[in-house]
Amino acid sequence: MKKKEENDLMGKIVSLCKRRGFVFQGSEIYGGLAGTYDYGHYGVALKNNIKQNWWKKFVDNRRDIYGMDASIIMNSKVWEASGHVAGFSDPMADGKQFNVMFKTSVGAGEEATGAHLRPETAQGIFVNFKNTVDAFHPKLPFGIAQIGKAFRNEIAPRDFLFRQREFEQMEVEYFIRPEDWEKYFEYWRGEMLEWMEDIGLDMTKVHELEVPDADRAHYSKRTIDFEFDFPFGRKELFGLAYRTDFDLKNHKLEYIDEDAPSAPGKITPHVIEPSMGVDRILLALLVSVYAEDNKDGEARSYLKFKPNIAPVVCAVSPLLKNKPELVEYANTKVFAPLKIEFGRVAWDDNGNIGKRYRRQDEIGTPWCIVVDFDTLTDDTVTVRDRDTGKQERIKVNELKNYIKERI
Ligand code: GAP
Image 1: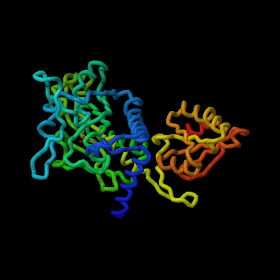
Image 2: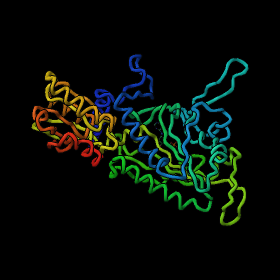
Image 3: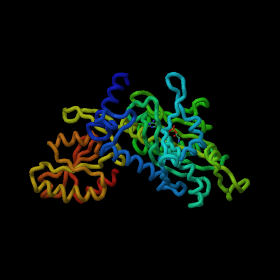
Image 4: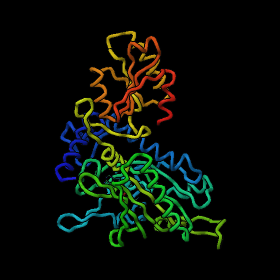
């Protein structure tokens, strides 16, 4: 793509996000706050779908990964042990190092203790390693997964959701025997690729970068960055790191490996860590699915979400909103049952049908369902496909299955 088109694409995505209620600038009415964004109705829906899809694949569908939701404010001793107090810094323009962790204190006066907002969710997992082992007695290999906010006082936040000061991470710390690290590194590489494809990222824009020694984080012995061709350049989407036993050792945490094939006894497990930024994934997804074409002689922009990830699965409309019999039918016989089944169902009776289609296209709704006068006599509705614009008549009592088979 040419430079101007790239900038245009980013501008179009940012403006669509605001216009259609996906993402707003943080604290906007007071002039904003750099590096912060607020998610609106469809943005939250999309973000939730991304997180739920991830949680289902990596926690619910497995036996070896435990969930976790740790505090955002953590004792500063955690960050001393993890090496972040000493090493989590970026160079400023004049060459000085600036630690990007947000510092705070907890409690009043003399009693106050030093605390930090976590710059990664990972430490919330490590400091609960013993709790998890004591509660669930997991056998190696096993993992702990967490989705939650992380905070970094980035020197130069930029590129919309890409580099923020408050963002969300989805991380798995996968604990293994040291001799198995290469096998599980490769395994997690595959899992990540599979997941990205499943949510509908444009895989032609995804590239793997073997991070050279000098550029790796202080805890990592091997890192692959999965990069993505954003409109503003090829940039890190997320990382896969071999953190060795760095963190558990620093926190003085051990594990009794009774089933070790070689020498059963105390060990410090090693860690493979797939670490993703939710907001970056969401931005990459928007870039992947944004499309423009001409429908019925009119230019349109639309979001080609896979139905499993689209903020709205289908929209229901009465052909005319001033015909009570159409409204009543659409509401009780179509909208209500679909809403109960899928949740992510919109009611749209604003403007003419063409306008409604354009609006739903723009937020990426895969199907628009219209109740018209024929419906009242034959119990069929029009289902319009977002991508092709094609319409078909479907029996009302087959709608649920029609969507279920395609979602
Ligand atoms: N626990 C490992 C860790 O935090 P990282 O590479 O510093 O590793 C992981 O961060 C991921 O979090 C990144 O790949 C990116 O997706 C996301 N991320 C990091 N900083 C971010 C920021 N300022 N804004 C948005 N996402 C960010």
